[in-house]
Image (cartoon, rainbow, N blue to C red; front, side, top):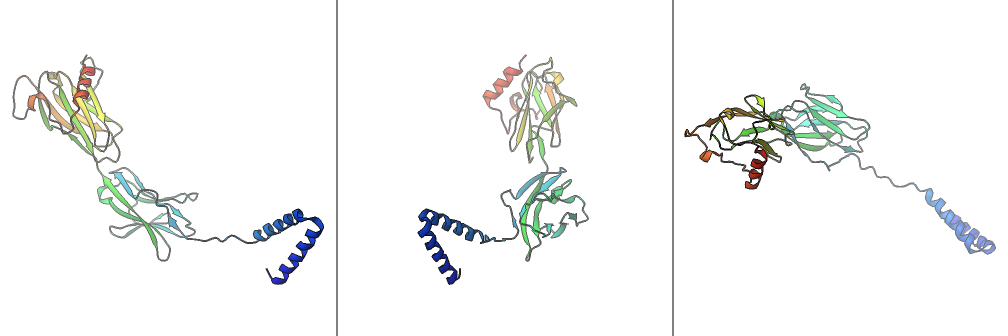
Amino acid sequence: MFPLEGTLLKVALISMFASTGWSRLKRHYNEYSVSSDSDVEPLVIDRGPYFETSVSRNVTALVGKTTYLGCRIRNLGNRTVSWIRHRDLHLLTVGRFTYTSDQRFVSIHNPMTEDWTLQIRYPQRRDSGIYECQVGTTPPMGHTMILSVVEPITTLLGGPEMYINKGSTMNLTCIVKHSPEPPPAIYWTHNSQEINYDSPRGGVSVITEKGDNTVSYLLVQRARDSDSGKYTCNPSNANPKTLVVHVLNGEHPAAMQHGGQLRLEYPLSAVLLSILVAVAAP
């Protein structure tokens, strides 16, 4: 404000005070202050593009199952986003276009969002490694993601052949390792037929404990000759595994499990086992 304008304002305010009183003076002074402040534009700082880093950089994928690497960029403007594979510094995508000849890599972007996603179809173990979401600034800025492509391993303890005594309890233990998520279901078959836990035979039960390693136990009470044969554990997201069970009538082959019961790497608790035996009994 110039000095002359300030002086004229003070004179006007003093004159108004003399004729209308302090309350009106205060009201007019406040109105003038608000009007003056509203003429000042707020200071806006453009910080340029930046990455949203709240999402984990580590992604675990299953062999053969489409996976996605996410990248969220704020204040992108008209800058270009690219995806680069660090292993060979290969440019995979530019904008929404696939740059590599490997058409398994696809860039996905919805203009209504700030997300730039790299889709990888049919990932293989060799696709594991570091990938970078890069913004075309000067110099370029990037956000790295670490991809681990795993193949779940199914193990049947005691295989490929198991020997048990007739009349003893058969305990088959199936373990699924290196799965990004627990298998939604694990199916057991006997001689290629899915096991019916409510069959008239009775004494057959299964329990599955899900976790980093998913363990499924198949319990068969009072083993009989007809229980011999091939047993297959088939997780819904992993390869199946099979072993052959021999129910013996007093024979004692060297490979026979001690005491007619399998030594377990993942043992059932005694209480849990007793409950299962009681439930499975006809």
